[in-house]
Amino acid sequence: MNIELIGERLKKIRQEKGLTLEDLQKKTKVHLNILKAIEGETLTNLSPIYLKGFIKIYCKALDLEPKDYIPDYKESSSSVILGAHKTKDSFLRSVGMKMSFLKPNKNIRKIIIIGLIILAFSIVLFKVVGCLSSRRTAAIPLSSKINQSRKQESFQPAAGTNIPKEASGGIRLVVSARENCLVLVKSDGKVVFHRVLEKGRSNNWKAKERIDLSLGNASAVEIVVNGQRFKDLGRKGQPLKNIVITEKEGLSIPR
Image (cartoon, rainbow, N blue to C red):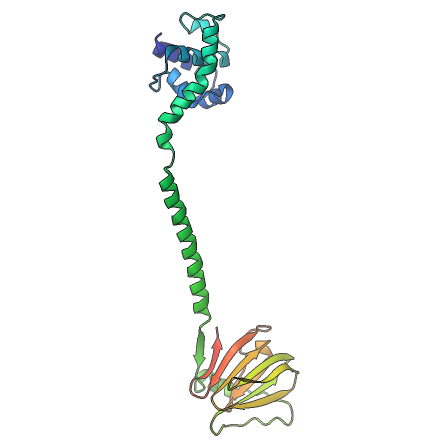
């Protein structure tokens, strides 16, 4: 059986009918490599009886008579019919074994999975490090020009509040509320104030070495540290935690 001549004839008819190999594969459920082999595009080591069975399926899909394309074709031959039915599974197993080298190796899959895990871990670690870096505080010296300009701004605290111009040793903090604001003050590590400071009210505290200040609303208060005034510590409604005030480093606001 000259498979090349038969394949050329079948290929030409398929193309005339406007069908692609993929269309024929969907219609016949025959593996694409087998269809290519029938049309002579690839080599095949199928036995003639198996190949006849696939050609019969090919012909049926194109509404052709198999006997016109298969030499010694016998429609009633049980052996040919049986062979045609068995061929598909047998050939697919054969092709599957020959093409197994195309499947990814298990070790390669493991390497790819491990690589993806490492990549994901690296991305998470990078984000965590970036988040921690953004939390580092920026020190604001009491003698800075910004603080000097703020010092000139006027703000009238509630009547009776004593705001010292200078502190003789240690730290003196005054907080005055424009709006109601939750205030937490620690003096040398001890909580001395933790409640809402009402609008128009002021309060002051002392410390020898350090004051920790937290505000529920950064724009709701004005503070004075050893006679220097600070306004607009943050956006409206923005909470500020762990503001650190020391006599040596001044005011440090977390960013």
